[in-house]
Image (cartoon, rainbow, N blue to C red):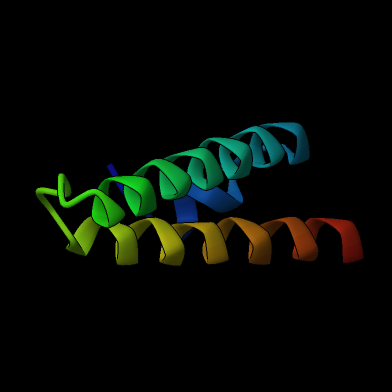
Length: 65
């Protein structure tokens, strides 16, 4: 399930990196499902991509702080 920006910003840098790895893996699986015609919820691809962007933004903010 997608997390809100506030919840993401409360995570540590290590937790954010782990979450980003999980999201990238999920995105890969979703793209493979889409290519083989097995994807049931196409909106999930967009949600994963957006959450990845939120995590990257939080990571950048933490590294710049």
